[in-house]
Image 1 (cartoon, rainbow, N blue to C red):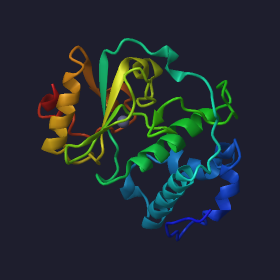
Image 2: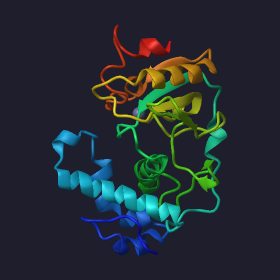
Image 3: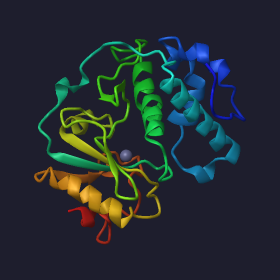
Image 4: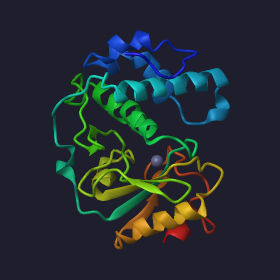
Length: 239
Ligand SMILES: [Zn+2]
């Protein structure tokens, strides 16, 4: 296959064979660990070269997925068997620029959620080919969110209500919740007014749900930013 994008720091051709093997995520452990598992999302602590290299890995995974060059399972477990009645909405931000393509969110889901899950020896699926029973636009999707809201107020409806999103680090909350993600970096700024209006409309479809920010469920994350909570927090706009 021919890569369309320009790569400066990595040689994507080196990885084609690796990704064609069912255990690609085990072969890729060093890269995945350095650039994804151990990265806390704080850009200021990283050099431009490091950040560019990371983004090239993401672009490569997007291109490989697009060309069906990543080995995935054809069938597997129905992860949604554990679905519980929905009583919670969890708010996230993507922590990426607002013009980030949905394909990038998908690639990040594969790398940051599914790859580490399949890499853990204690899981029954360790070493198996990766499988998601969630589909979006006729392909397996690794996106963990039910809704992705853009800053211009448009949104993508990715997962169905019957799907369990792998989004908040707690399987119990995943089973009971709907995940809404703002496609934006909200560490230092609230979502746009249009994005908030759209999120509010989505939330109205689930009138009996409690609303949590991701960090209220998983204290080690900053998601969805510092301005969500408190008396002045933008959570209040969503209620
Ligand atoms: Zn989050």
